[in-house]
Image (tube, rainbow, N blue to C red):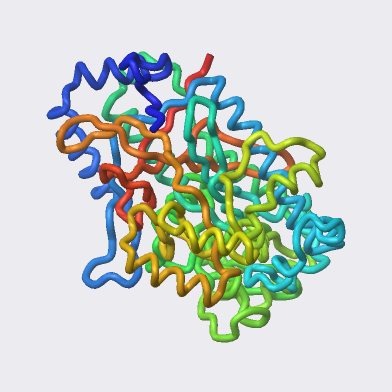
Length: 468
């Protein structure tokens, strides 16, 4: 296991020098007390997420660990280049498959993985969004296995969540430990809302001939990420609207206000494709705006992200992203994928079934840590049951090795101990690429656990990028 703070001989890596000193001087008992103070602040502010299917009150706090995760400037430079490269290639792929499908014609990506994919949206064929941008916020989940061993675990091209925690984690840390920031050169992340608003506004539709009006569209307060929807709208100075606040007329989208109807040019939507327009997708949707897709296709409004963008974050498509980078950009990937076996291929499926005890198996459409098998942690009975699922529908699964994820110092009952982490930066794609120096670090709070998802008991950390 690669410990990001300490070397094997116990010496502290340079990026963590001030953090290690702060931990030692503060002491574990005071750190635990300050952690409780932080949780009280989160609860007071109302920073929660919902877990569907649970009895009682499903609202939870995401556990917050006070010890920050730190990248030095050199590490961040490489990550930034790799993240931007990947976001460019993913958007090029989405445009291609809804137009000529050149990558499929060239035999680089199997056509059936695209055409038969539930995330493929036939209604988007031939549609050209402003700037040819389909995925405006790309969240790329990155893991580390060594000194320079950064790899991409998966891509999130629809509506990646968690950026509100990136911002709130930093706010809490700066409020509680201002002295810690005075002793470190930590790059700021607080300009993310302004950058997101700029990204949205610069991709206004052709019909917009004045300062663009953008809104955040939420399904409402019962959605698991509603706090983030309202937080981002407030931080950007935009209206937070629900579907009943919008209507389509004369090929344009309008917002109902106390002063009458107002044009809406850009919608940052946090509603799934199937529910955004009952005239185009699910007729039984109570969350949609009738006629919204027609207005979008005719250039009357911009949807961020575009319907059908989710095809690029399907785990079966993920395997081909390095090839996309070579095909569209003519470059070698800066960040490689985690080695992946596709159960849709008979020989690879055979290998997976024979080695379930050593692999992590995921549903290609799954998310949030649900529906996956961690072979080394599963019982024989659990592996046998999962094998039957794979045999019944091999194309629905991929497998990856059980990675020895890097670990960061984390407050535990017995002191500060290493816990496994991953990382989700948020790349904004507009007329230019924008990436704040930081992101969301998720941490597996249980000793030995590799599952970092908040829905599965994981927590979050502030992420520092040190400047030169």
